[in-house]
Image 1 (tube, rainbow, N blue to C red):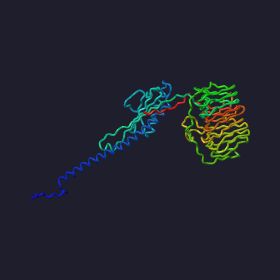
Image 2 (image 1 turned 90 degrees about the vertical axis):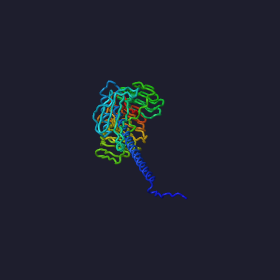
Image 3 (image 1 turned 180 degrees about the vertical axis):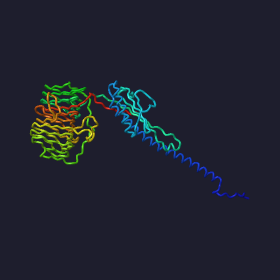
Image 4 (image 1 turned 135 degrees about the vertical axis):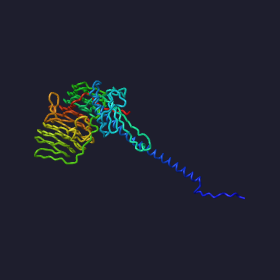
Length: 461
């Protein structure tokens, strides 16, 4: 006879109760694990964001401070200035006020700041790169407390995120250009013939071309560069023939000099310019081809002028005054300033009003030709953009350029009589090629040059 088995309802089975209890425990542990992972993911994202922000703070603060360092190890004022600049940049990038505080791990040259949950160390002198003197290095370490909101909720301790950077004062080049030919390959990229002259005041005459006869002089021409570290420099080789003279002697195989306005932003001029023939007054805006041929004083009111045709100055007796302006030669623009005794005076727009890209390297440019424009920029005969006397060209109330000339894809062609030509004050003349003929004169004056081309270089830590 088959034994009798009692009936058991599965819904009320003790085993089922045990299984249900196990599922609840497993689910609880899974939820805790999921919450922990979510906390880690969220807080890791927060930490990474802080890491990026602190790296940016360290980078910008150290780079800005390095510019104020000095090549003189005894210059304590330079170190003090670097500390202040680094703290200022860190404060602005952190968007919080910083105040001096005790350093956690004090060391020589270190000053520390805190505020808004941030902690910043600035150290100079600093020996991070053994090949660079310590007084030419500045180290910034920026720290912030990770929020750790979710991690704190489950009992985890928030972490501090720190990132650092070291910048150096790179003074490997002492060549500051006063007149610079950018052409990297062309023969005679910087060329003088006839009785032409080129002068650099507190700066060098430089040809970036790697060719033979990169810097070329012949006939009774002369070239002179003055100021600390000034040279007549050819990246390739120089060629000085006939009665030509160079002071100092030309140097070959020189380093390529960076375009000082490589990052300059070209303007956009949307309005049409106007000319009042009665008062001989120009107002800012765009122009096609224009000609100044009659005697009298022509005034360009402050602003930006774009020329898309040929800008001619000819005849005799014209006196052109353009203060607080930028003359911009667009894609189709060109300058042909020819015969007659005419005077041109231009002063560039001030940095506060400038349209961008200057970065404080030099005063703004007064004459700019588009990078897409290869039309020759021609100055001839008795055109005077500067007053020449005793072999030096000066900017006066009636002639010269207070600012710079930048023709990145065009040749500057100057010829003339009786020392006519072009000179700048405070900024260089930079063109793709520089060609000076007859009695033409070109001078760039880089006021205040100390003989070093300083550049801060970031080194990641």
